[in-house]
Length: 213
Image 1: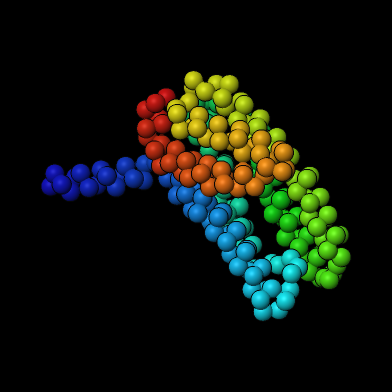
Image 2 (image 1 turned 180 degrees about the vertical axis):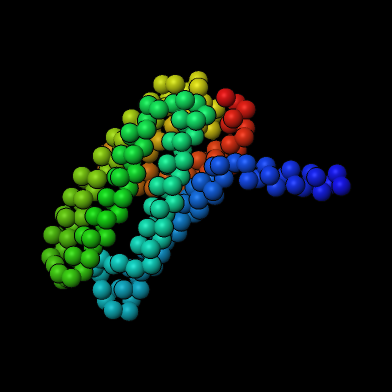
């Protein structure tokens, strides 16, 4: 009986964490992000080897990126909720909303642009390269600045948070700086999966977060 009671309590405890789903989706996002890039590279190599095609592609990698975006939207909304409920911290609510919309717009623009290029292909290589760079030059600094401001506001009150959230803030700062420079933006691609994995752990350890507060 005692064992059964303990099992029931354990099951209740598992369902007690309102951030558990967000935690697992964050960890899934950390896996999906590099996986989507690998699939994208494979798509390009298949196009070159089988069809001698060197232009833009739309395929399975975009489906993975869309799923990644959906997972991250939910996780960011829940992160904002956690900061509001556990820490009474509302200073980055608008910035998180901006970050969500930036991610959505980046995906829409990226896919739309490549579809247009596919329809118009072949286009001069210089035009394709310059237009691709143009999108990056506009999008990356905007996303980087948003990340930098989010990190700065979290770190300004870092005494309110535990170490894992502070680590998220430092990673956000580093990623934001890399993105804002455009040239170093590839480094942010390495930091992003780490950021999402740590956020997942923050969610899954929600009860410890509550005790910390």
